[in-house]
Image (cartoon, rainbow, N blue to C red; front, top):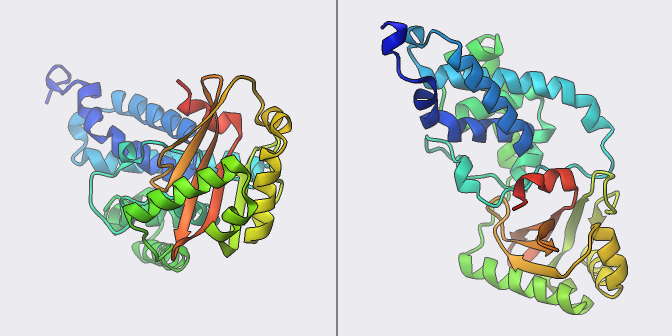
Length: 302
């Protein structure tokens, strides 16, 4: 096929953009970085003799994975020096990053899964995502990672075992998600410490990511009562809470799924200043993930 008869690079790239963005986001935990990686992959696609590419999906998956591995090398020091708990950038539209192949983990973009991926080595993460989420075969994984097929099978197996071990097994119904989220929002709004304590699992964990940019708990808070006291303490001091949120103007809280989890979005003066993602286990809230770092909320702003 001559260059003049090749499909337009943008047209031929577009069917893969969503799944490539999902791969990059799962690898990096950052929507902004994922978008940069996918744009870089497109530029490489544009400069490639596409007539020689027999499997565009595999070629682009390989390109994005290698770019992500390079990005993780440069980001390692930043992660080690990060102030407070690190959380992935929150998503309000997880369907936009669904892979184009069905798999056990295809629809899971929860904070719990992404934090588990963060604890894997970059190669384990890449092998698992390429094979188990994006349904690429082991020869392609081996080619991408420049390892033997057997080594890649072992990498993916270790990752798969850890993901399954740490993955929440309880799947709440839509009604339960709605009920608990509404009750949680109401208890926070009223500063009702007893109601919050009843909603939270006894061993619940609260994570707050401010990244040193805004005030946030520097360590995870453990236990229902301690979490409830922390949250209601802010509500009882509204001016202090507003200063900690880093803005001015009226506050507004609305329910919205965050990374496919029950969640809420807190707005101030027309901007999103905080997201909540709730992990539910057996009728109680087992974990609360709060993202406050303005850099991690930038992609959500109107």
